[in-house]
Amino acid sequence: MTPLTGRKVFAIAASAFGVIIAANVTLAMQAVRTFPGLEVANSYVASQGFDAQRQAQQALAWTLRADYDDAQIRLRFTDAAGDPLQVDDLTLLVGRATEARDDAQPDLQAQGDAYVAALTLSPGRWLLRVSAHAPDGTLFRQRRVITVPDAGS
Image: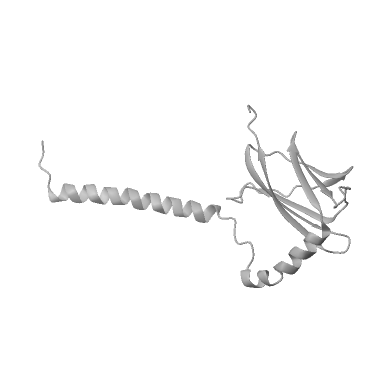
């Protein structure tokens, strides 16, 4: 058995710290690479109109229902009485909550009382960011989470 020298202790300690530093650098790079970005450029300015926008949206009394099956996403808007609504300037962003790589903006088409788009989603949780305007110009925005089950489930 060879004796434990100062050089060996240094090599062991340097190797251990090297592994720790390499893991930290790798994780930091992954975090920065997958960060989807900021929601708003200046949160203070965005907060100034938040209450007025929230009250205007609540006054609409709209309900949004989002469904996904058979590689189709379906959005239904209803008013306070439960009657279907037609909306203007409808946009939808579908993505993961943690990374922007899988983000998609499907082209929604009116189909009866719903808006439908063909979209293939892999299993897991998906975040829907829906934006539409009422006929009077009031902005309606809502986030919904849907879960796509595994094919075997």
